[in-house]
Image (cartoon, rainbow, N blue to C red; front, top):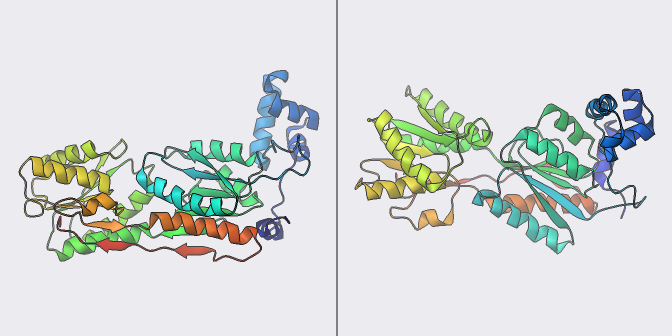
Length: 343
C-alpha cells in the first residue's frame, strides 16, 4: 500500500518527522548515545539522559519501535484515546469505530486518559513509537508539546466528540450550543431558578462548554446561573446526593440541569424515594440520551448525542484517506433535544 495521503498533506506544510540525528545535534551527543538513552537508559549517565530527553521533547522526535525489526515496517493497528472506559458514552463511540475497522482488517488499541492531558501525551507518544496506521483522539485540546507532535504525525488523525480547529480531521458536536438548547427548554417551561450540576469541569471541558452555553442563556434573561460541582466521576448515587445538596443550598431551586443522564437518573430516583413530585416539586434534565432514560417514570428530558455515529464516521474518515479518497474534514453530527416528563 502506498503511503497515506495524510503524509503528503503534512509534508506540503513542511512538517518533516525529526530523526535520531536531529536529537543528537540538539543534545550535543552522538546518535549512538541517543539510541542508548532511549532503549537502555541505565547505560548512560543521568545528566546525558536528561539532555537527550530534553532534546527529544524540543524537536518532537518519536522513537520508531518497529524500525529495528523491519525496515519497511507497517502496522494495521489504530490507537483510540478516550478519557474514560467506564463511561457508556465512550463505550458506544468505541463500538462505532470497531465496527468499521473490523470490516477493513484493522485492529484497535485503546488508551484511557482519565481526563488527564499528561496521561494523554504519555499514551500517544508510546503508541506513535509503534508506527500506527492512524490515530483517534478525544477532544481538540492537548498539551502544547503534544499538539506540535500531532502536527508532524504523517498519517490520518481524527479528533472526536467536539467541533473546532482540528490538526487533521474532526467529528463531533457543539457542546456549548447543546447546553444553551437545554437552558432554552427549561426557560420555555417557565423555570427561573435553575442550577447546573457537574463534575470535574476543569478536566471534562466539554461539559464545561455545556455549562457555558447554559449560563449564557440564563444571563441573557437577567437570571443567575449557579453551578454546583463535585470533584469525582459521575455516578448514580452522586446524582441523589447532589439533589439533596442543591436543595439545601438553593431552597428556591425549580430545575436542575445535570451534566449527564447518569447523575440525572440518580437524582430522579432519589426524588421518588423522598416523595418529591417530578417535575412539580423539582424538574430534572440530563445529557447524553442513554436508552434507560426513556424507561424511567417520568421519562427523563435529555440531549441525545449520536455517540455510535461519531465513532463510525471517524472510522470512515480514516478508511477513506487510507484508500485514496478525500473525506470530509469536519463533520458536525448534531444533537437532539428529547423531551420527557421530568421537566
